[in-house]
Amino acid sequence: MKKVEKVWAELSANKVELGELQKVELNKIQQIKALASEVRQLPSALDFGGDLDRVSGIVQELQREVRRAVTDARSIAKEFDAVYSDLEKAAKDLGMSESEFGVNNEIQEIEQMLGFELEMYEEIEKELPALIKAINRLVV
Image 1 (cartoon, rainbow, N blue to C red):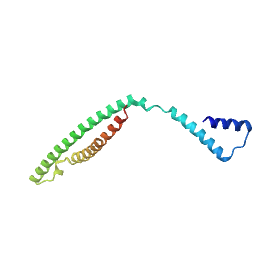
Image 2: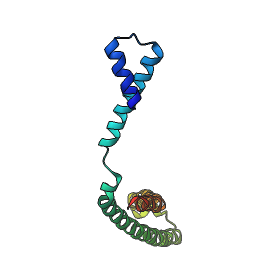
Image 3: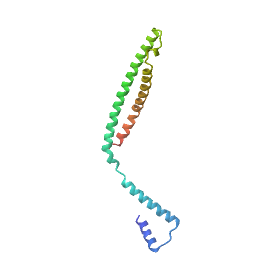
């Protein structure tokens, strides 16, 4: 680096015309110095240790909540299937359609919401372990 500075000083003193190659080299040196300065301004990854610890705890709590939600949703789905099956049987025994009981909207709502929620919970439950592992790997 001293050599470059020495050459630069000599060139400046003698007002020597630089060739294109030297101009490119000097430009690259200036860019490297600027990048080094930017790197020095980055916060240390070690500074995030406490924050990552808290995030890890929050994500682990989220994982517990999602597991409970999955268990609850599956339980509700199982109960719904049993009740709906009984409703269909009762309708058949009475020679009716289950739609005549006036709960079509509720049935449709349960099927749609429960299906959507359970699918989302299961997707989150599947992805959280990788997130926790990644966060814990970063915690110093």
